[in-house]
Length: 298
Image 1 (spheres, helix red, strand yellow):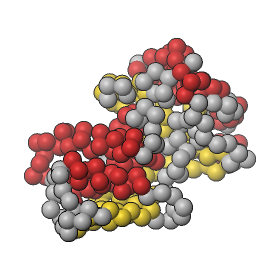
Image 2 (spheres, one colour):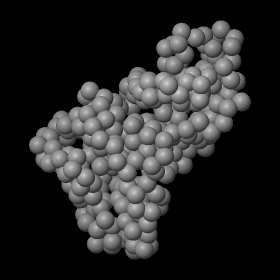
Image 3 (cartoon, helix red, strand yellow):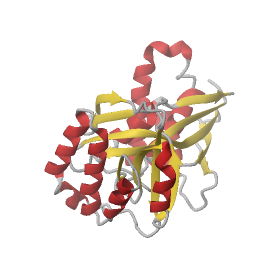
Image 4 (cartoon, rainbow, N blue to C red):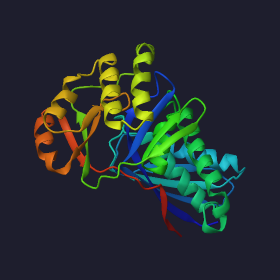
């Protein structure tokens, strides 16, 4: 066992929202969460969490992540856990999944579970980390479906297509164009809307988008999914059309909003930003194909 461990995990953007069909897809983005976990062998089980730079945001998720791992291994350590992030929270960019993955991986690291000596069982540990992170998000009422698509894209990077109900990865892929940029819009005038009943109404239409995703038509799938969910949740679909007019390859609502996400060539970034910045804050980043990782052990 180590005294302290730091790990990072990235956010993700939606290709297919899984709420309507229990099948989804997401892709990693180069915005994320860094978590540092310190364990104290004092038999007191006192877990203290801190989120740097996010005043007023609850630390319960990060504390629950550590607690669930300690409970899993039947340990009575105390812990200090600190996270910092450049990922907008509560925006549909998998901030909860990224946080859960980073904290859970860091806790595994400090316990000495996730090391080169355990290479033969890394796949099993990856599954455990993802599923304990999902459990923590369920415990804190931060997910409807378990967000297995978001959690796996966040953890593994690249594109994941998943059966969320049975927690199975159906396909993995990557966006390999080095000239590709990710555009994220966080609108200033819209709030998250979680009308599950309305989202279930569009199941048959989302299935069409999901089929496009399975056969590799990711741009079309993302755009179609975004239109379906935006119209269902009362977000403007015209934003996606404007992004396409300005040069985006695809653009649509991410998660249940309020953020929108899209992909474009680097040469079109400035035109798209000019078109979208009237709606809110625009982030420029890249697709992330890298797996979550431990960055420091002490």
